Length: 114
Image 1 (cartoon, rainbow, N blue to C red):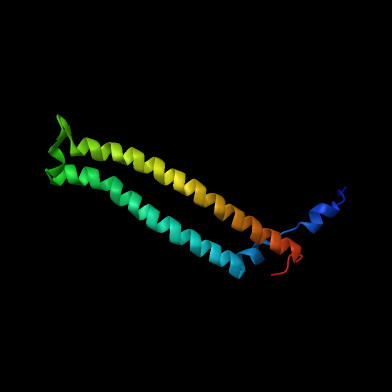
Image 2: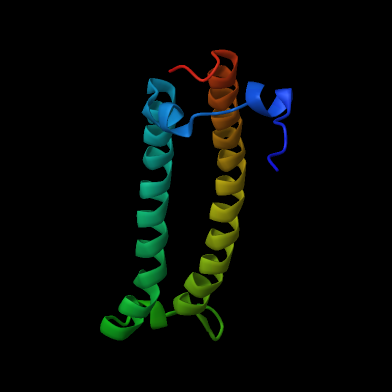
């Protein structure tokens, strides 16, 4: 036996294909891409620079303070960089989530029409 649909469910139906084709959603995805791609490139370059530099160069082997070399400083900087990028991403992701919620809310208010 089919259960009756709740009025609230019917009213809040979201056609996500229409949301996806909306200009607001396309702008949101463009903004996300403009943020994520450069951050990913920066992370990968910074991450792989240490093993490449220590394998093919000697400049990271020079001491900074006593027996601590630039390689150790760079390695610690990678931990700091990871935490900073994570914090920046979380803050930016919250704004992306708010924008996405607003787009869905507008679509619901229009009754599912794009």
